Image 1 (cartoon, rainbow, N blue to C red):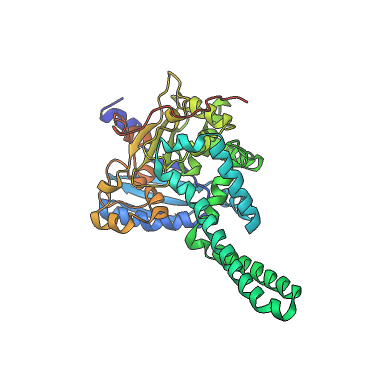
Image 2 (cartoon, rainbow, N blue to C red):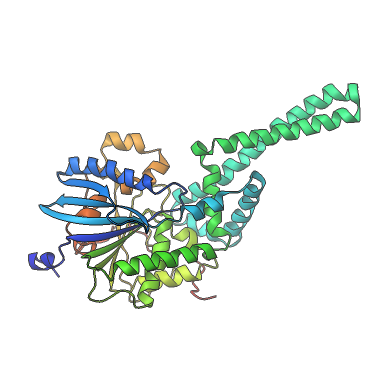
Length: 415
């Protein structure tokens, strides 16, 4: 459809937005404050108004209300964060020894399956990000062992002549304690180093070789119920936003809803926006049967619009990699996703890009932030503006530099 009449038909006055975070242990209020701050900045740049207020209803998922005045039209949007931070926290409660055991298992899973080599053929950035915690934790262990070994050698030389074998035992105990103390110190600084955090992140999917752990499947079913209920209400659009690891959760949740017939034909327009996705990190694993089946299924559905936004400047995402095509499960009837670039080097000012270029984790969240010169990707117009996701990107061609080569070795969708 095209023209003013079709646009009027799809004008949004009310919207329900469900945001699915990535592997993040932080309280969801972080996302509300980020939206408040960055939405205000984007509104000032782009000449529209956005105002946040508390969520109207008590209970249910954490959320907030947004009133947007964009393109001369007012929109009411209810935001809800589909929280799985508690699951993330539980998975991160690992001691030092357990984390190093995770490191060994995760590295073996990706290397032995050949997934690591195939991921390198797509984008080196996210693979380097995946290798970072492995290398950094090994460096930490090497430094701790060297430090402990030096103290053992010095203590042995000093104490053995005085106390004999007992001195050697004391020196060994002292060296081991010193090594462990240094490892504890490194772990205490992980809020800046992110080695343990990223190790737990990659290990969470790798531990079951791509299958979702039972506790995550149960939470995803709850998310599906929340989205399914909203689709029965009188909103003009229900928009699901999956960021980072939340993207592949969204793929499976929406596939479940569609298979179960829970997306009414005469209900709200359904939009699916994936941001900074890392789908291949999971879909390339041998037992990711469910995810591969869901990617193939969702890509061919006409009940929704699926837009995938990444940027080559985001070293933590598989930028411009079509998650369905590179996973080698694209059906002949494939329609989605529409792969779009946020083009950080063009949409951020030279000064802002210079400031953020090497802040990899901050850039991974740029999709949720303000741009100095936004193109057709504006998170706040998408979530609080008067157009549906489908209308906003109607006629938009996919990024010319997208990657669609089928690289994945594991293409089965059933055990």
